[in-house]
Amino acid sequence: MRLLAQSQSAWQYQLSCVEALGLRSLIKLFPLTATTYAKITKTDSDPKAAEREKLLNESLAEHREDLRRKAEHLVGGDSLKIRDERYMLTLGLDDREILLQILNDIRVESWRALGQPDDLDLPAHPSASELTQHNLMNLAGYFECELLNLQEPGDPATEH
Image (cartoon, rainbow, N blue to C red; front, side):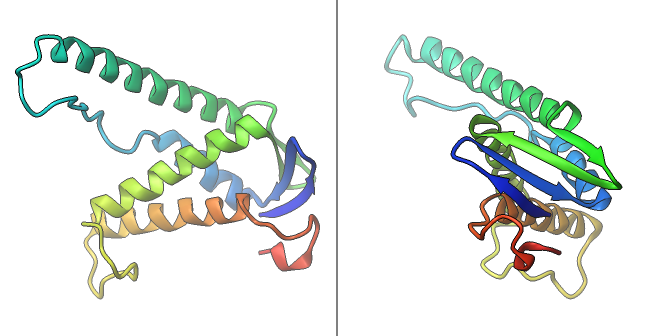
């Protein structure tokens, strides 16, 4: 993945076919975990707590679904186009933030599924689940790093 052009409000990246497939695959997995319900209070002494919790959880679920739809549009719509056996990903400021939020969520949820290890290296004999989570964590991290790359557009150091 290579940053081709950048302005104050837009970024254009070039991706290989493998990178485009990887990014699309990650986005289709979002959200990685089942919806968890937020609790406003640990006690039931407030009679309106249940109502507030319901509203909060509905809002969180709507937000995650909205992020998922927007991200699918980003990697399935006009933002990601093939050109000369390479893909061009064009992102506005809001689109870039959405993509970063989703990639971060996937990376963190994969890390949590691994038991929140301090050592991010793959264990000597990983289970299939550990291998999958480790790969998802690293792939999401790769795209996050590339999207946040601060090198100049077209700099050969950004090519992989």
